[in-house]
Length: 386
Image 1 (cartoon, rainbow, N blue to C red):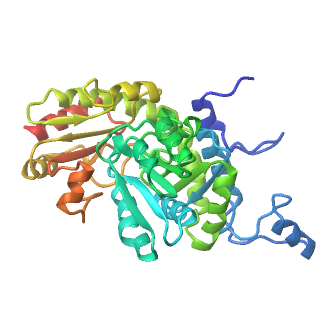
Image 2 (image 1 turned 135 degrees about the vertical axis):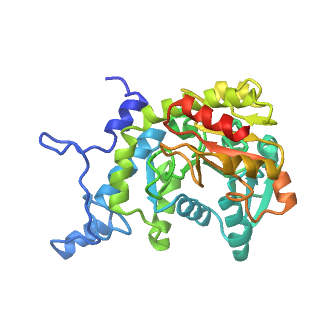
Image 3 (image 1 turned 90 degrees about the horizontal axis):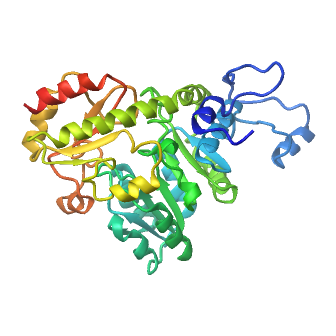
């Protein structure tokens, strides 16, 4: 057979094999595992035989979910975490030491930026920032050990040339680390474009039901396995129940993303025509500054996130408070459509200069498009904008 398409992988990846195997992955809800002998423990310590010792380090259900996510991204291996920030923290701590520099795009999720600015800086890690469109060029003269970026960016939805950034980072001796949460492997597969590590807040589209926190790092074994070893010491391990639900969420991943991408484009086109909206950011619109790149780099759609501006903070608050169907909440990627105001959520605690560099405005609204009927969502947007 030829390599299965992504929708097929999403349904079957990680499933048990065998003549009488269960159709779904069993939940191994145990913290610890028996050994038959001291020799068996020694085999485990050498990494032989697929043995397990303690679920902070590895668990059969979590391992199945890791195999599934790795397959979806086209990576050799994956390590899962209890949250997206757990994944990002482990990656940066594994790649950086005191005195090292991280190069990051100015358009970055607030949690990642604050981790670099407020936490890792306490341990001697330096931070260099570059505009997204200048990130690849900045790699050439940067002393950084790692290049951290997103595509599309949060919340401005700029699209970076993944192959260009990855090539520039590798030439400069850096590890490239992309947060691909907004795109998902349904839309893009950064590893195939040369990126070293793909990170996901699997809380979002991969799990897809707004009911669990989860994070993932995917890449080559030589890059990921040292981070996996570090993760055992940091302790942000995924619970087997969460891993089971992540696998269940993945079974509907492709159909969810197909609907969310299609509805997002429909809503973006609607918003672009509304006089109360001063700007719409969606890579699928011809008006988007990176539309040509998005058409080249992204497949199957342009993602389920739409960001738009209604002008002022007062207008944004007024619009937000008037929503009826659309939920006012943080996060994204679930079946329900929701909006957040970046200045109150992901980018709270930013100075005026930091907001300017991130291109986040007071009138900005970030919308995660769900699975509702598009007509109902348009009706709610229309009345809230009135």
